[in-house]
Image (cartoon, rainbow, N blue to C red; front, side, top):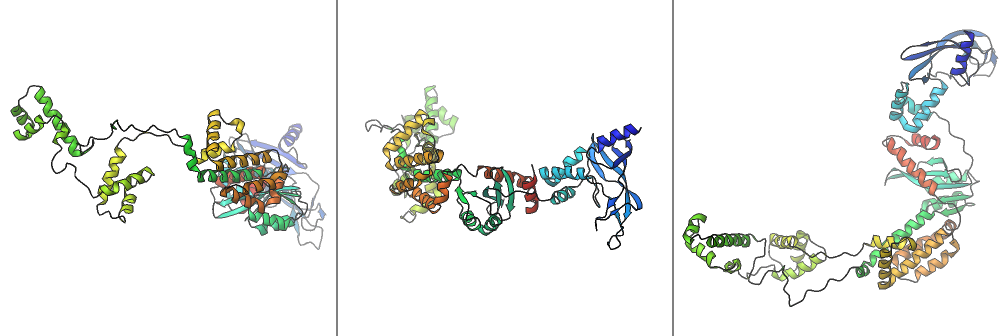
Length: 534
């Protein structure tokens, strides 16, 4: 029996000494382990005096890590000792088993560590649900309290630190994350993104040699004030992203040059009439209510005449007068019936149709907008007449014409490696460059910057800036002015191997953690989960 208990002690408490297992009671839902401490005495937590004078004992029932889906509870007999130091404020104290119990603790230390790890991974509600599945009944508040009670991790002063912002409430409130670029681990979170906060943090760590950042002015000011000895490195991805935005804006400013990629449609011969147009003798096109009704009735009456029906029989069958039947039967075409006051009738809109057609071709198809535009020009008619005219244009078949590529597409051709472009896109870009000197200059500058970035030739940056200023490219001029204000950091970013890629990865992780907690968690809990979670 003694050997069995010793094996149970090794199995249940492999890293804890001075614990003896007396018995184990197992039922369908719970495992109860009866144990006691075997140490000869204990140290007073108040004065540190050793004592072996037992004042009394009592039972504690701390919950332990579950086993096989069953809850495990220790029935632990602990002793109360009398402090031998007469000057100590404690008369008695209770022994604590290192690695197993703590004062007023209702869980063992290893169960607390397990629940804290669950809380770091899943936070409150999800952590409590997982703990329940594992066999531990615990509330979400307890899980969060265990996470909050975790000690701060001891982090050595980094040599290369990366800094970036993260949003606690997008567009309104931001914080700052700092990452050790060499170990790829987050080392701190700041509740704001002010330059003064970053400067104070850096000033407390004088061993920092390199600061990787984006080109935000508050980070530049904070790094300069807090770590003047450190080299500031502008992130290469942000530089390329800024260049891509400037390239797209420049391409959009010369979108007319992209029409060279649209094949010209042959003009319609003047000798051949357009079949879509109605003859001059037909004032109503297809779709007009009166014209369609007239054409339908004309076809019906002529079909009955050809079938051998007399005009009197047609009159009785259709409920029409003999004069009306005669008029339809004598007309060879339906257009011959379009006579009277509707023939070649003028409209108050006629003199404004040219203006409406031009605006329609420019892309403005809103009837209300166009009506508001022609009223100051002298139009006295109604809005409904304008709407009917535009509805006629909208429903009439229009020729399908090719559209030029968008500025974003052409900017993508410029930004990609030339050797990766398909042959068709390469030829199209070549055609645009031949037709537009500005886009040709833009392409040369972008590809020159790409070589400088990928091959880390930062010493060429001043020449590149000077070359950009020689061409009429306002968007690139704006980018060049911003780079010139942060020239040293940009040259370092284009020369040194450091970058902020690992920081961007942790920003994405912070987004995931924040959304996982549905925005209800405070800064302290978020900081614990970011810094302590594996």
